[in-house]
Amino acid sequence: MFKKSKLYTLVAMLFIAATILTACAPPAAPTVAPTQVSAPEATQPPKAVLSVGIVLPTKDEPRWIQDETRFKEALGKAGYDVQILFSQGDSAKEKANVEALISQGIKVLIICPQDGTAAASAAEEARAAGVKVISYDRLIRDTDAVDYYVTFDSVAVGEAWGDYLISKATGTGNNLYLYAGAASDNNAFLFFEGAWNKLQPKIADGTFVIKNSSEAVAQQDKAKLTREEMAKIIGQVTTNWDFTVAKNLAEANLTAAPAADKGTVFIVAPNDGTARSIADAFAADKDVTTYFITGQDAEKASVQYIIDGKQSMTVLKDVRTLVADAITAAVAFLKGGTPEKTTTYNNGKIDVPAKPSAIVTVTQDNVKAAVVDSGYYPASDFTGLP
Ligand code: BGC
Image (cartoon, rainbow, N blue to C red; front, side, top):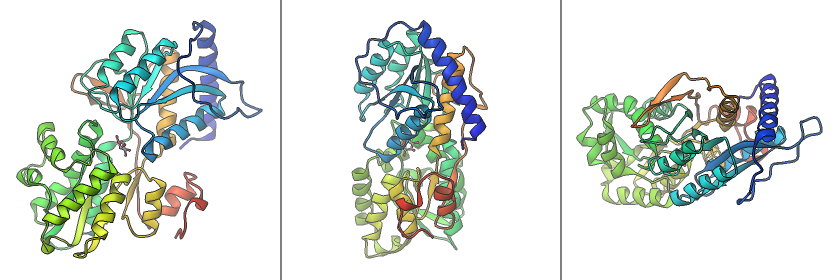
């Protein structure tokens, strides 16, 4: 969370950095319309161009609109124009966005890759142009052209799913259905790794029985999986982060499953959008009596699903924190320094310095405290808050 004093320091740092940089920057030749940020408050410094470009993966998921909104809030308050460009799920568009930003003289690129491996060439172009590259939320893979990784603790997200499902299971033989994110997203592996850390011992001791993945069954005695082993499982149960793919896969799994594999079910769903699709499919099956289902992002629609008892939990990744961390890292680079590092993430080529942020498990029990009382969303966005 943003402490007020921290925000003021950040605003001051941004102003100094932008003033220095705009003074020495060559005149920009804008080829892409900048995202307009709200007018600065009277007490804030005047609007200035910050030499940072931001590229986000898609407008089609509320998660990334949330990031855009929080970036605009943080930078708008400080009185800056920044460019926030969307790749719309297309790596070629992502590369064109990066090239447009480089041509406008950015000094720092904050980029959440659509496809972690495909984004390497855009990162390399930025590096070659002297631009610092901050991988945002998702790690860019297989290149040394990544200077920093701003992220949540994604393994902890998967562990939170595992802990939640374990807390709801009794006895043995509980039906477990696994779903994963897109294989092109490094996070899908980290989330799966976290879930496996917790669930595998409970599969090995018979608490859970995997119902929808022969690849996961084949690995169920192994506590630690290699990336290749995870890739096989993810390949079988991927939603590709797509609501329709998730719905179709859940329906296909339910069609294939005998009634005995239904009843009370436990579902690892990889994020809120896919969780709602999967939950709807399970809720529509007459042989499913009760389901427990995970999620992440605390999307408004899923917060409402949790209030209504249609989704069991979500993981709040407070985007305000991620945005603040990204801006702090950008300012550190603009000032010629290096951002704070508490750990590293291997991207297949190098260990990328990072400072992962904590996550919060949200259920019906704490939904009001976690997402409303914390100031994340207004109460008026929901009905029936406990
Ligand atoms: C993000 C999630 C998001 C998912 C789909 C992941 O990389 O960490 O928050 O739900 O992508 O966009």
